[in-house]
Length: 401
Image (tube, rainbow, N blue to C red; front, side, top):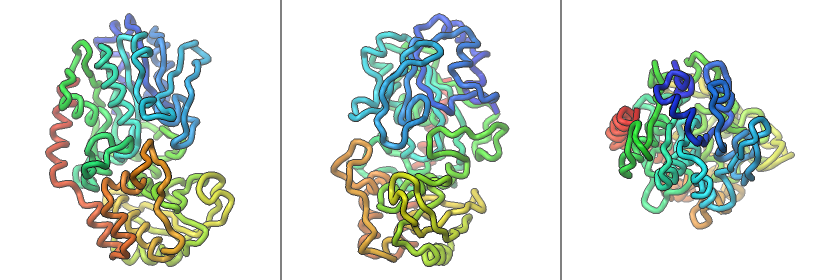
């Protein structure tokens, strides 16, 4: 398998990249098959970017979730590093002033296959801003670490009024597409030219890409794209595990297995594990445990909870599993469980859980005490229209090549 960055030295447009006023949007996982970062790949090819852009967590990937990142200077090249994650929604897009310094933007961001992993939306916002500024965009695509099998899709697209930075466009929770496919899809819909044309989008696709392959089957290591995405195992559970951010349960931040470990000081992990086992949901074992997070929710407190061990990635349905987990936790201690109401990803008026699930339906059903398995199956039901959208996205990718 060769990702977009692997193919960069052989591109017919390399001379153009060498002569361009270049900007690069990247993060720690922007590496080639030898694990060389894009900045050093470009340096080896005689290319010196004028500036770098960094998404959420920063160009270097040091920042925690929802932490504003300031701009900086690259110590090696002296180029500016411009943050695309600040205190305001407007900070998520490159400014006209920064784009005035370049005429070509290269984007290389690794995604993990869940709608609320924000890097795909940073790429789309950067494309929109670049197109408006007359800047051509080359996106170096990467495979989806949890696979692109159509049968793995979970969740409907968001209801009207529930779009946000954890889903700028209507997309299922687990979408089974690559960054290149999603960005090309919306570019085509918005009339942004595709292919090697001025002010358009060109996507360098993954070669020898088995769409259904998981990261464990790649011929290269998984590189963490953000601080709490350390392993391919984390990516497998993340489409469900991130839902816990919308509650007062710990999603395992501050432990060595974020999103796999879930709990709270008042939770009975053994009871929760038994109830999850009783659902008949496949592909995992919920192991009861206690843990003490070192930061964020319940920092320094002993929590009861479970660790979700994926035993069969092909049958495991993370969204359904963690929806059931959330409902059982609420049923166990309704007086102490709560859904997050604080500001979440620039939104003050909609509960985080609703933004993540795409509507208020699952939260209201949990609060009403409805059957956890029924809630999980309904809220994770695949969008029947999505297979056709997937075909549209693949066609857009081919046009952008």
